[in-house]
Image (cartoon, rainbow, N blue to C red; front, side, top):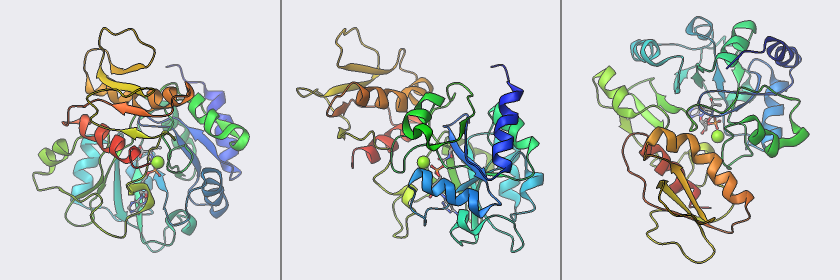
Length: 310
Ligand code: TXA
Ligand code: MG
C-alpha cells in the first residue's frame, strides 16, 4: 500500500494536541492517543465506553523507546528479536519514573506493550515524541474493527480522524504474553503459542479465564457481534445465518464462508468483517460450523466462544 505522508502528518498534529485518532495495525485498528497524556487517555476511555479498570495497550516504535518506561528481561529480548514488530503484546513491569499516564494503566505497575508492524503506523510512531495508547477501535465488548469503514460505523463523528491503512492483514488481535516471570499467555491471538514455546524452549502456561481477577478484555463475554451466536453447529435452524469455515457449493443468501480453500489465515482475516456483515443484513442470530482447533483456529474459536456468551 502507498503511504500517504500528509495523512500521517494530520494524525500527528491531532495526537500532539491530545486528541484521539484511529490507527491501522496488522491485527485490528486501534483507537490511539498520547500514552503520556492523562487527557488523551481519558478521551479513549470515554469514546470507547471502556470500563476505567481495563488498562490500555501501549504501542511503541521500538524497544529503545520502551526502555524508558519498562523493565525488560531475556525472554522479552528473544521474543522481540524474533517476532517484533508484529502481533505480540508483552506484559512488563513499569519503571517508577515512567511517564505513562496513570489513567492508561489504571494505576497498575505493569504495562501491556506492542510494536505494530503496519507501515503507516510505524511511520507515525517514528515521528512522535510519545508512545500511543491504543485499545482496539470498537465499542467496548463488541467485535473489533479491521477497516476504516468499520471504525467509522462504530464511532461516526466520535473520532476526530481515522488514519486509513486498508484492511488489517491478520484480522484478529495480538497474542498477549506476561513475560515478567514464567511466561504466561493471557490472550490467544495472531501469534501461535507453539512458535513462542519453540523459541523460548520452555513451558508456556496459558490460564485464560482461570483467575478471578480477570481484566474485562479477557472476560468471557467479549467480541460480540451484537446478536446471539452459537458454535459447533451441525445444522442451521430456521432464520439463522450459517457461518462456515470452508466455502461450499451452496448458493443461498443465508450462508457465509470464512475461507475459499479452508485456510485458517484467510478465515481469521475474514472473521470480524463477516460477523459485522451478518448483523448488517439484519439476521437475528448466527450458527457457526466447526472450525479446526489448531493454530489460528484456536484463536478464532476462542473469539467465537466468547461471542456466544452474549
Ligand atoms: O492486536 C491488538 O492487541 C490490538 C491492536 C490495536 O494493537 N489491541 C487490542 O487492545 O486488542 P485491547 O485493549 O482491545 O485489548 C488489550 C487487552 C485487554 O484485554 C486488556 O485488559 C489487556 O490487554 N491489558 C492491558 N493492560 C494489561 C496489563 N497491564 N496486564 C494484563 N492485561 C492487560
Ligand atoms: Mg479489544
